[in-house]
Image 1 (cartoon, rainbow over the protein chains, first blue to last red):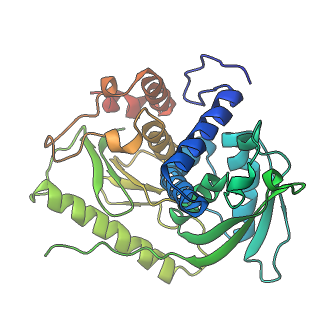
Image 2 (image 1 turned 135 degrees about the horizontal axis):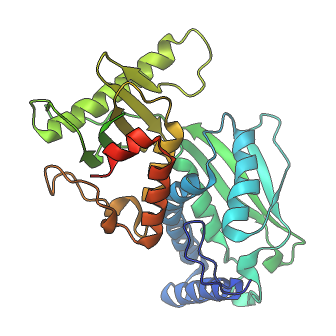
Length: 180
Length: 155
């Protein structure tokens, strides 16, 4: 993708290399700041969550999708609209659990990991964990509590990258307490 | 065709924005109470509508009208609520309310950059507060409205 000076309301394009390298710099800095991989993973998840709770508004504003009626519809919207809009890829949806509350997103290529190699000293680092946080944060804002985690990662030698999504429960609206 | 006023609420009931164009009669209570009253009414009516609906719910509460005005309601899946009071001649404007929401949330700083109602008692949402791309979008929204509505919208 080449840089375009497109400042319309539709989207601001940027070089995908810039995006990948920026993410890499972020993870590298976190690895320097925190001694162990587990803390880095937690930070990435937390940052992703904060991004997700805001990203969902931008997504709804731009994509015009209505409320999803069930988890299957949600899965379709995530894979075909959201990932396409923000990362330019369309993961496939597979491995539905019999109860219909778990599925896998299979990413053939993950734009975040272009040019990336994971050294042996960071074997428990979940490099793209930000994505799990984003999914969790965004879905929480539309009243769905979910769990997202990487079960396969090309950085660790697997053939594809797989994110397992599990629906935990519906979050109900609460009437805000009034000050009488 | 007239637009009277516009409210924007977030998912916790906080009024993010209020604009007024043609309001001949005030509510007689402080603005903070008015926002709470509006939000509380919307919350109650949504739950009432879903409980008492004789059929499966699709979009839920859309609008109500009295003999003088019509209240239009649009809620995003994230709980952002757009409420607009117009006169009776205006038909369904859910897409317009959605465009208002879009214009606001994709502007430079998103929803948190709206002038908070407590800063000024009545703020007319002037187009020069938004950056150029949002202004363009707002103008598009206004162009989409029927001409009579549009004339009363721009102060």
